[in-house]
Length: 509
Image (cartoon, rainbow, N blue to C red; front, side, top):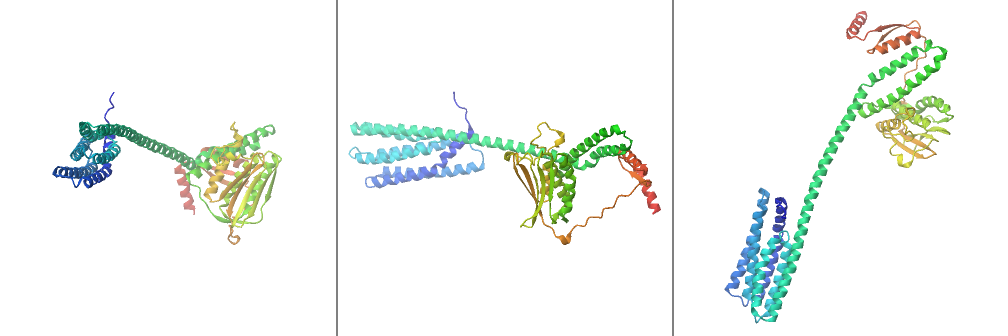
């Protein structure tokens, strides 16, 4: 079964043939010079004409190689046409070398015959390599040379020349075998190169498709985060209204139902916390969280957190210790507080016995190291690189909602990156974990002055106008204000009524 012709593969083989002319032409010139040097004294006109013929043929082969390279750059080539030209030149070259041998052959000078055969052996050996891309070109080269030389030596009839003819034949067979082997290797290497190129092209296409799909997925995630961030107010409204209703009905609940009301409160708080975490991550991913850097007293940031989580820790028989001298930091106090709140909540959640310590220490690098250390379950070294991923939890295979969504540390990492803070984690299984933040030191003379806290006052009898675009918020707020003894008025969320109210207010002013 014949192999179908592959023009692309064939062209690559012909390219190699013409590329090898850079070696073949100088090699033939060297042999010609050697023969001329040996036979110059006995050479006649015939020998001279044959030598000139070799020179002209080598010149033509050089010009043919130049033409091939030019044609290769200009348009698509027919490899069969150029192989025929190359093979014709090889045949003529082999014929000329055979005629030169015949012209120098002298029965009485076997040393000259051996010398010429020595050079011819070099020509054939080099041709077996330079013509290997297309074995047929080698056949065209050695055929006239082999036939004429063997016939001439066998005509002598002497044992010496007969042995020389047989040895030359063996050499030709061996050279042909080597050339055929090289030809197959070159054929396979070219095929392998094309297969590799096809594989690379396919992999690049698959990579481009994967990158495109990844980009689409990232755009979808970003669009989702952007939507959630933009709609966070509207999404929180139902939960907010539910909380207001719970506050409003507290005074009407029978003592036997107080426990159920508290359960509803805990459920609402848990749902609100989960929902807030999800929306916070979306806002961070969407890049809409603004940083407001200020010089702030660190104790005023961590003290309220200590008071807040001390109760939660006591419920689990844990001690929450605070060791924070009066230091000044330069950061966003609200975002830093959110980081520490999540770290403390995480420590309380995963610590079953022992203590939790919040320490603040000034370092020698103009920073303040804030560390949250616990005696909890610890984190395996193989998992420490994953704990800051979204929705990743170690000790919650059943997805217990009381343990959160696995967003706390993800929010910590994103906020730390947003504030350009160095966040580290050191942990050992069953020994606890330590999360540390390096916060820039601030200037006490440039401290941020928080607005004074207004003491609580009674609002009984106060007239309050409630305006909101959510009807449920209006109703729930009205119920809550009523429970406080406040006179309230609800404004239906209709644009025309808003405009009327604004015009009345402007006219009065």
